[in-house]
Length: 65
Image (cartoon, rainbow, N blue to C red):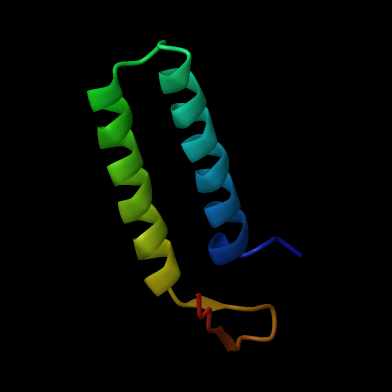
């Protein structure tokens, strides 16, 4: 079974967030660019949280964070 967007997608965004923070701390990206990227990641995370998915039993999954 494939993992849900609410689970796997949010994990992948967390990995991306850590990469952005790490790259900025190594001064490989500008702090303003890092802030913009983090804002976009936060927006995507919020949208994923609000997304309803259907599980393998055709039941709506709900995710409360």
